[in-house]
Image (cartoon, rainbow, N blue to C red; front, side, top):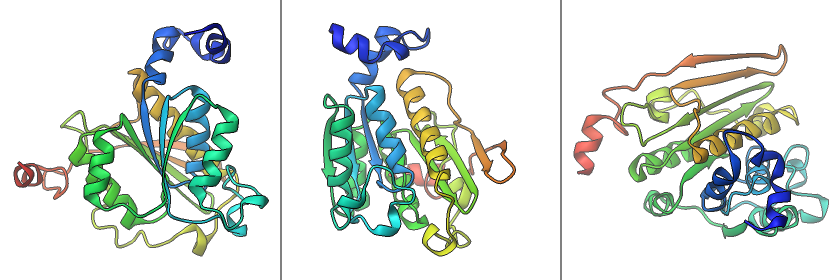
Length: 253
């Protein structure tokens, strides 16, 4: 690590749980960011700023005026552009040393599994249940940790699914088929700053995963932005889960 990099990351290297060795671990890491909206913007920005060496950015959408209230990687001049292109430009300005890959299309489960197998962590910044369920299945199959967050109105939630530990639950264990999860920010609204809070916490979880530090795995963090109450719930694996349970494992064997 040269003098310029030591200076850039000096405040992080000072942390006993990071140090120069931890910073080098981040530089060697590959994170996949699914979605570059309200959650994906702070996720990608803080991972790049922290020195994660390679980011793969996945989003097929284009920047719209209604995005700019909360999707801080994009600006007025980016309206109509692919979000992966707009985000990549912002991240290059933030940290030119970060290697960026962009995918501006929908990925099926097989493609997600292949991508996950090449990564150290996946971060889910999508805004609908179908996408989250697909990403969860791919992460389980690839055995790669998944930091998952969601926001709506004044509420947010976050957890980490660490599939390196076979006793840990997955997204399907928590939400099942998710029939009740049909709401989106486009339908119900969201406070501008709340995706920044949850997305920053997702990035924090990913950095801790990459550094080998304790995470939220096995717990769900619930955030009430109106009352500023933060609480955690314990999560348990569903032994009959069709995604990560024994039947699913046997079927995939």
